[in-house]
Image (cartoon, rainbow, N blue to C red; front, side):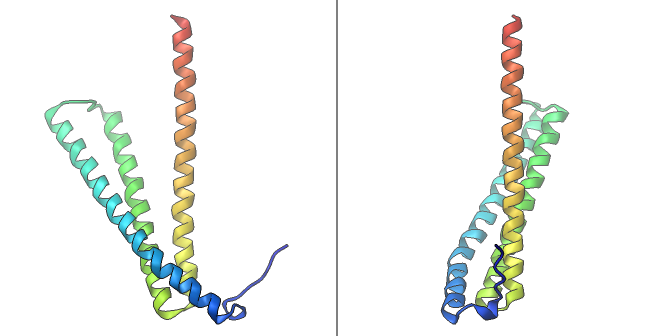
Length: 138
């Protein structure tokens, strides 16, 4: 059963509560975005230093995988930061478009994060299977 609610059919108290909750959470979204940017920057610096020194696993595949993860981390941080800004605008203006855009950014963040978790789990299971198969051979 699908309920078709518009902002005009919601009570003023409900809309004020939504705006208050978004005001509370938007700071955390921005904080997580900044922490993600910072940790990604530190990871890239570490990758660069290990590449220059020639220490650690500095193979091309290792570097490409780390750059790929850094790209995903930056994209996710951008979605969080954009959601925070849209949340702030909605909390200030109460415009339905801002709420929709806020939710769209949050949805995209969680969709990408969920897909990355599923991929990570699949790779982990694959590695366990490969590892156990190699262990059986000798």
